[in-house]
Amino acid sequence: MFTEDPAAIVRKLTELKLEHRDLGAAIAQLPIGPGCDELQLTRLKKRKLRLKDMIAYLEDKLIPDLDA
Image (cartoon, rainbow, N blue to C red; front, side):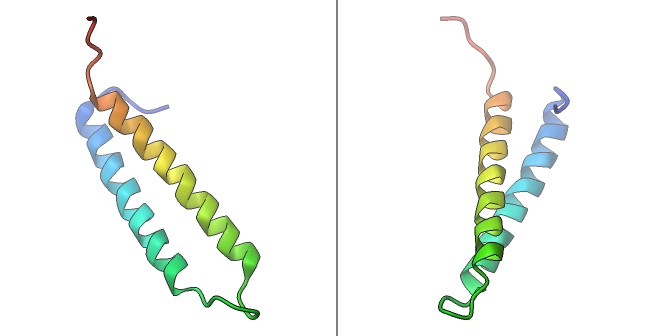
């Protein structure tokens, strides 16, 4: 999925974290109530969760495997 180059992983992590933060801000700005777009809100939240999973995956790739 991603290259093994640590520098490339760090760059991708930075991009994903920025997008995750921006999605959080966008979700917070959406109006809550009868006039809000529930479908858009659900899609944004699912995207944010996918980003969180991808961030965790890439952070795990940066940790070297140590045989105990």
